[in-house]
Image 1 (cartoon, rainbow, N blue to C red):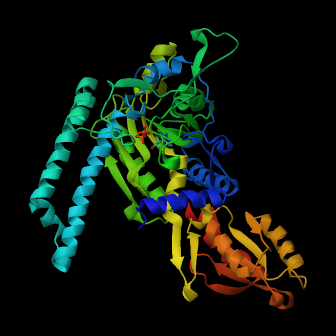
Image 2 (spheres, helix red, strand yellow; image 1 turned 60 degrees about the vertical axis):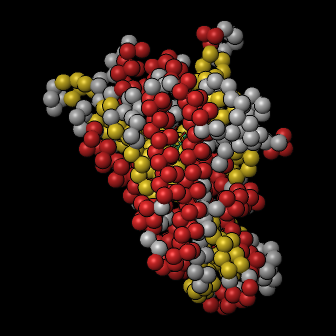
Image 3 (cartoon, protein in one colour; image 1 turned 30 degrees about the horizontal axis):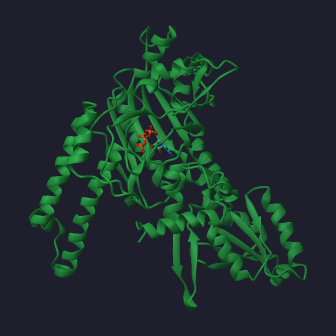
Length: 510
Ligand code: ATP
C-alpha cells in the first residue's frame, strides 16, 4: 500500500496541513521544485541535522566540522569540472514546448515495461494461487522473457551511448522506441543538448562576464579548498574527516517527486582524507558505518539497499548509493564515493597552491585520497516522513493518521494536556509544561476534547502525551500515553524523566 501514488499524495497534503512542508511562494502559484519547511518541519529537519552532526562529528574523534560559504571563487568550479561537465542531456518536444531529460524519458519507458511484467506476475499469482513460483514464471513465460529482453537491450544501448556522450544515438533510440511526450502524446522531438545545472549570478557592481559566479551545486568543494586550513588549525593527522551541512543549488529540469528533487536543497557531506592506497579499506568501512546509521533510526531494513555504480564518474575508483524505498520506489538517498586525489590535485593545479599533507611517519608529503559520504537532508526528511506515515483503523469504527517518526527526531517529544481547563488543571499543567521545557521540546494544548488532542499529536508524531487530571492534584501522578501503542500508564511526576528519557533522548541512539 505504501508504494502507491495515492499514499504519496496523502503524505504531501498531510505535510502541508500539519505545518511540515509548504510550496515556496505559494500565493504566486509556487516556484517549482522549491519548498519551505513549516513549524513542525523545521523541528524535524533540525533534529535530523543534530543527529547526523552528533554521529558524524561529535562521536567521531577524527572528524571536525566546517561551515563554508555558498559563493566561491569561480575557478573552484572550473577545477572541479562543474563548469564543463555538470550537465543534463535535455530534449524539447516541438509541439508541447515542454523540456525533458533524455535519460529520464528512456528510464520512464523502461519502467512502463517493468510494470507490464508486474501485471503478468499478478495475473499469474491469481491464477495459480499457492502453487505459484515467481522465479520459475519469470524464467519461462514467453511474454515476460520478451519484455525483459527488450529492457536489457535498451539498458545496454543507453549505457554505451552515455559513456560515449553520443547524443545523436540517444536521440535515435528515443525515435526508435517511439517515446512520446507524456503530456501531449507527441513524438516530435528536437535534438538533444547538454544543459549546465549550475545557477549563476554576478558579484559586485560590474556586469561583465568576468564577474559571473555560481551558487554551489554541492558542499564538498568548500571542504576541498579548505583542506589545509582545517588540517593545520585542527592539527589533524591522516586519516581524518571534515563534515558540513549546507545548502546546494541545482537547476534541475525534471523537478518532480516533491522534496526528492529540488532546485534548492541541503546536503550533509563528509570528506575523509586517507593515505593513497588505503581508500578501499575506508570506502568499505564508511559503507558499513553509514548503513548502520540508517538502521539505527529503527526503519525496517527492507527499505534500504546498496546500489553499486557500474559506470564510475571520472574521479571515482569505487562508488555506491544507499537507496531508500520511497513511495515511488527505490531511489538514491545517499552517495558513498571513493574520489581518489582528483579534487585536491585539480585545485593544486588551478590555484597554483600546494594541497599536500606531510606525513611524518614516512617523512613524505602527498596529496591524500578522499572517501566521501553525501546525503541529501531533504531526501532523508522524505524518507522519515513517508516511512512513518500510517493510517490505522481503530475500535468503534474510528481511524487515525499517526506519524511513527523515530521518537528522538519527532518535532515535539512531549505534549502536556490538561484533561479539562477548569478546576486548576490548566494552571498545574502549564507549570509542568514550563518545567519540562527546560529539557525537552514540549508542546501544550488545552483546546477541544482530549481524544481530539491525542489525534492531533499523533498526526505530528509526538511520541508521548502527558495528561494532567483531577487525580494529579491529589497524588502528583499523570497519565503517560504512548503514541504507537496508545497504552496509558500512571506515572509520578518525579519519575517522568526516567520514563521519558530512554525513549526520546538522542544520546541513547548514538
Ligand atoms: P541524482 O542522481 O538523484 O540526481 P546525484 O547522484 O546527482 O543524485 P549527488 O551529486 O551524489 O547526487 O549528491 C549527493 C546527495 O545529495 C544525493 O544522494 C541526494 O540525497 C542529494 N541530492 C542531490 N540532488 C538533489 C536534489 N536536486 N534535491 C534534493 N536532494 C538532492
